[in-house]
Amino acid sequence: MIETRSRVLEGGYANAEAWIDLAKRAEAVGFTPQTWLIFRQSLEPAYLKDRFPSHPENMPKRRGNGGVETVVVDPEDFSEWPWLFEAGYRAGEATWQALAR
Image (cartoon, rainbow, N blue to C red; front, side, top):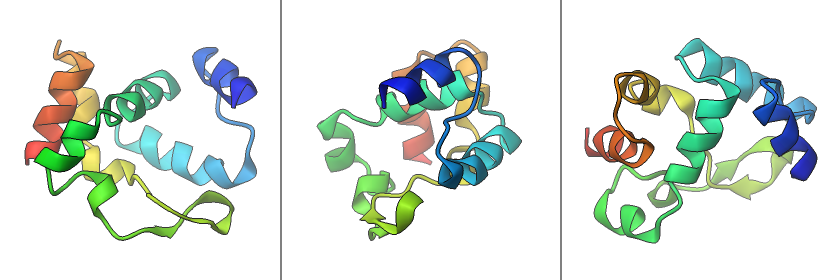
């Protein structure tokens, strides 16, 4: 994970082959590697899961990268987030808005 984080912070993609498709899909809706990392971290507070039924933690688990059953975050479900963040919303505010839709 440390190597992946370093690559993302340098503006690159994660080195896991299974993540390349996800990275391309996220980029297609406006995320950069850095903003995807910020967005994913902004989803972590537990109260968001409790407050918003649309939170990915509340969705059925699916096979994610590596074929493991896990919570999957589809970038297309949060396509407004990069634009909100670029417009000046803080990460948490943009996440709140995206989950409230």
